Amino acid sequence: MEHFLYIALAPWLVFVVFGILANLLIKWAKKRRGIAVAFGILVQMFTPDPMVENTIKVIQVERRIVKEEASDKVSAKKQ
Image (cartoon, rainbow, N blue to C red; front, side, top):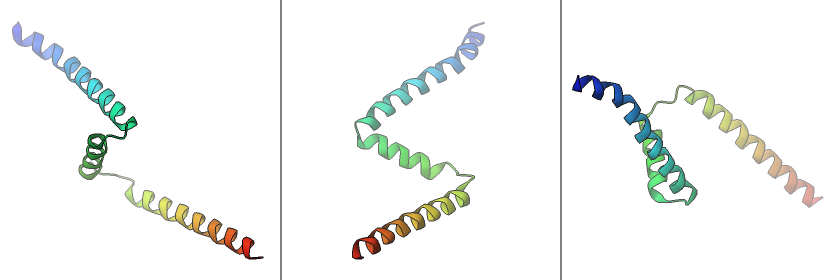
């Protein structure tokens, strides 16, 4: 019967621990603490991104748009 109690409470314990950890990381991220940034970088490195090709294309398009807007502003100032 003891093992049943542990098995029944284990998922809830894991859920509570992850909730506390998430709350702590959010507080640190708002304060721009290094540990939150380091944790984010490690998670990003070790978790696969299934949409990586799409993300790269979106970033390239956004950079192109920003560069075009910047060059338009520079040409408008010269006139």
